[in-house]
Image (cartoon, rainbow, N blue to C red; front, side, top):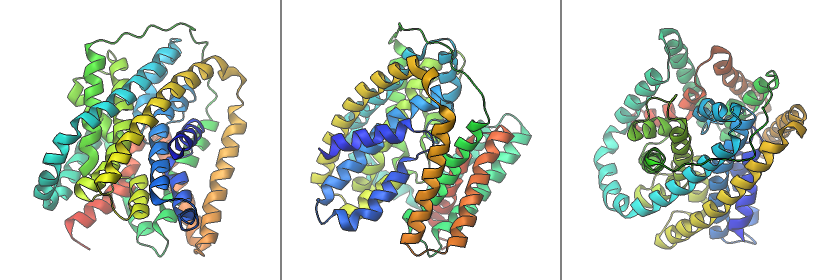
Length: 410
């Protein structure tokens, strides 16, 4: 029951633009002292896992149809929009669903290999994790930049988001309030505020679809599952960065000619990363995402029984989510003209701001500090839209603190 409820909550967070899965995760984690009186830690863990998997799949629908990407779907907007502008929305939805489901199965199949090799590899590389992270950051900055100007701005935003993340995460605030404030501003409210200024229309979608599963699609499924799993021991690296790795693994450098495969790989990284960030707790004791941190705190560490529960819950969650993604995506592709996007966006902005204020009051936090952090997050989140650079560089908010910690400076 927790798995099914989690899936439907993930559908809600995925379909409503701007709501990050960490927002709901922070809410459940904050309420966990009360919830644990009635429910076991395993129930809450399964709920959070199922919600994150469902969210990872369903968030592609608003990112493609509404043009409101989150950190995990930001690179999918161009190929996704290309298919939708051609009236191939149903095909795009099926590619995303296939990629997420297939990559999840690949991750589970490869789990014995990771279980044997990853702990040793992580122990061997741990002293050099900060070098690997730094190298990955430099590569991503160069790879996602068109010219020296965009590279300079990308570097500035990465550094400033990292400084803000370090300050916020080392403040007297609890980590859940800090993450809620940061992610709501950087990836939620800022994206919604910018999208409100964009007056775009979605063309009528073809009610028929032609989904062709060829070698490129199958290769992209394996690339997405493998890349999402590799991220398991790289703290702070998100699906956007993993998707570039999947692109390299699948040989899909020419995005213009391989949009279908790239969408499959993007979805695969998103889904497999949601699972492997939890599995990494069991293998190397490293919770690599916000949801993983919450689950680790609730369960007080993972044992083998927890691992089995997580695996079978993830299979159930991704199976239900795949069906819901196809059905809801098909419905939305035919109903876009009826949705008042402006009212929906303003409702979400007000709701998210209310949540930030509510948790700040519950934690007896300094409201001035919260307000400054929130406004700064929104401002930084708006800049990539107007500078025309990739928003995934704002993940410096987590990567920079991780690099500092692994360097042993503090």
